[in-house]
Length: 80
Image (cartoon, rainbow, N blue to C red; front, side, top):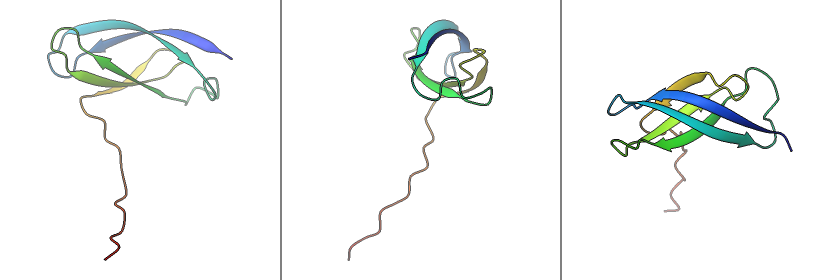
């Protein structure tokens, strides 16, 4: 299995402190191409806010930092 260690330079979305974090990426689809993205959830050591970082595993380029994960969920239909 292929594994990469990626250094991410991130600015906390809540307090603005700069964070340098090393993450280990592994699994299927890791080397599928330059357009592939990964997600890491990081807690800021200063304000304890969760930062959801979307990045490119091959280059370590940070695409976006979110304070809250926006997951589109479909409501289940009511049985009544």
